Amino acid sequence: MRGFDREGAVLSCDGISLATIAEAVGTPCYVYSGTMIRDRLERLIAGFGDYPHAVHYALKANSSLAVLRVVREAGGLADANSGGEIEVARRAGFAPEDIVFTGVGKTPAELDQAVALGVKAINAESAGELERVAEAAGRRGVTARVALRVNPDIAADSHPHISTGLSRHKFGVPLADARQILRDAGARPELRVVGLHVHVGSQMLGLDPVRLATDKVLALTRELSDDGITLEHLDLGGGLGIQYHDEVAPSPTDYAAALVDLVRESGLSIVVEPGRAVVGAAGVLVASVVDVKPRPDGKSFVVLDAGMSELLRPALYGAYHRVRPVLPGTGEPIRCDVVGPICETSDLFGADRELPRPEVGDLMAVLDAGAYGSAMANNYNRHPLPAEVMVDGGEWRLSRRRQTIDDQLACEEG
Ligand code: LLP
Image 1 (cartoon, rainbow, N blue to C red):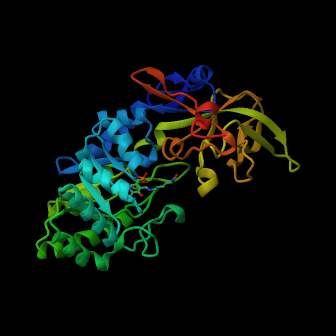
Image 2 (image 1 turned 90 degrees about the horizontal axis):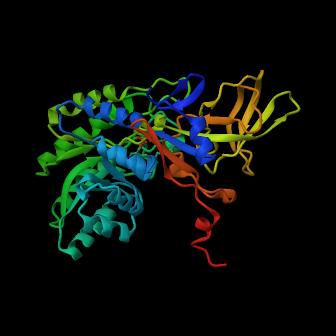
Image 3 (image 1 turned 45 degrees about the vertical axis):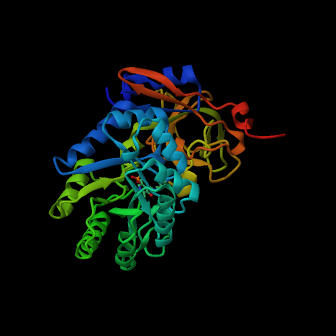
């Protein structure tokens, strides 16, 4: 049995009961299916066929070491968005040439770290940043490999908070400025311009935005070639969506095939930076019911021991996550809001859901929480970061112990 399914009656991960896991490690906890991560990644990689490609998994989606290990074993490379993510990628075993470094607002220390390591590409966000990379490389007497992130001014048709490709968004340089910026960069001996980078947005459910963006960078590539700048790759970012509710998302295979169709004529290698499409469906958050209370309108509140501190997406984006009882409920169905214990009204996992009436102590699974769940967890209300479990090869193991109050206070002086 692969992924999350009802094995008998109990919700299970790769055939292992989530109740067994929760009993052993406590709640709230994240549980990941190694099989699903591997499967999603392998299908994406296979979609490129024999066309040159590199799949750099976006660590921001989930950089737990256990997840990174599966990604690396399955042939994924790394996309890091900070000095911290570069360091975690290194500790997970990724070589410098397996890492691309993306992100708005890289600090001098982060740029120096990437230059010193010699990462595959620093995806520069501005002419100023290219200048700072050149200075860092000059100080070290090396040549830095850089790509320029362009802003294609394309709507991602996704949630406004995770759309990045319009000219009013802070990401990249205007397409119209890119040619001159790269001519200047190409003339600097400290820089080797290896690629162009574009990322239009996240949780995209259609291929049109990425198609449009790819067309635009391909046109720029031809102009650059007239200027004597020959690139190695096109980094087309991440953003492939997944199904959380009733949406339909393109398959990883169709996505890869579409990119190959577009880029083939250029002969350039394709780099992609998927996060959610690799890990999103491969993780659940398991929580316990701590209260069930009636509301004046006849509905109920089902209060969990996990909230926006463990999974921020619903509070931050109004994101939809399915909530399922781990054991089949026997109670009458009730209409309820599934909420967390945090002192914020937005701490709401699901409004107006139907669930078999739960009892205090029952386990609930919040599905599709593998991406941007653990990665955005925080200590609000002094909640500890939750325990994490990796299920792989028919076995489960605690891959991250629950944080303690001592862990939280270790950096503080009273
Ligand atoms: N590359 C770049 C430059 C990015 O900004 C992102 C995501 C990715 C790749 C990976 O995108 P993905 O394949 O995972 O869609 N916290 C939000 C998502 C923020 C995405 C930020 N950038 C959420 O929970 O939906």
